[in-house]
Length: 399
Image (cartoon, rainbow, N blue to C red):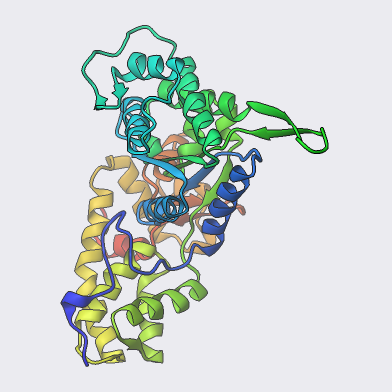
């Protein structure tokens, strides 16, 4: 039995849930543990899942959503667009969740009013409707607090957990971002006191509300700009490049899903071409898979597939560079020409005949807004995308 390109287990794209999730065991275990502790009434910090585009943030959220729903938990997953639309989206998703669980009549009046005021949403046994205009001038943070506490109380009564999974959070307008984390802080701070029926001992527990907020590395800075110290104190879950161990496990596992195996040489070559970048693992892996038809993926298959993947990766680089300003482009080209061991803000500034202070905002935008550079603990800068420095050196210098 051979392999067919149409049966490729590799799924190049953004946010797709692959048949096998490579790596991320430690990160996923932390999120699972958070949900389990919430189910026991133990307070848990919100999680901030951060990483560059293509690092697998959406995959982690989708996998967590599927697992927790199978366990009977209540999960709302929303993706933020630019502005404050996330508030209305959360309202509609929470209302839909309650209707799905036949709890339309169980939501208390304060929660119903919050839905109406925030998003013009009404809920009844007949369904969820957005037929009225949201109320203007309301205190959005307070209304969100009332809504989340009402739904979290229902989750507590049903002995389950309410999880909010919010993707692309870097797009959320600062005011809405601050309001969201204020509401989370207030609801997660609610403590329920109960007496043990047998011993009479006082027991305290928190409402079972958890949040996983995902975004680009600049998300922490945006929380600071939004004035949310609570958000800044969320537990970070950074997604970094795959290690060799991740790829040695993940690539063969994906191939096995399609009924094939890598030989030793093809595995090493494919790993090197991926550079630890999760998106490239699927782009390169898909081309390597399609480069032959045997059950064993050979070194020849790997060479052919890697060659075929290069134009796709170059187009990916081009797309990431397309929105940069002239000075940002020049900064990256200068950084690419400097040896990685000497690549600091100072050496890059010197190459551009400027001072580090005058280039500080350019550097920060390339790190936080575009996710193209990373700052190391030793003061050096490195490229966030494997191979981007080589790509830039091959391009004509824009001057």
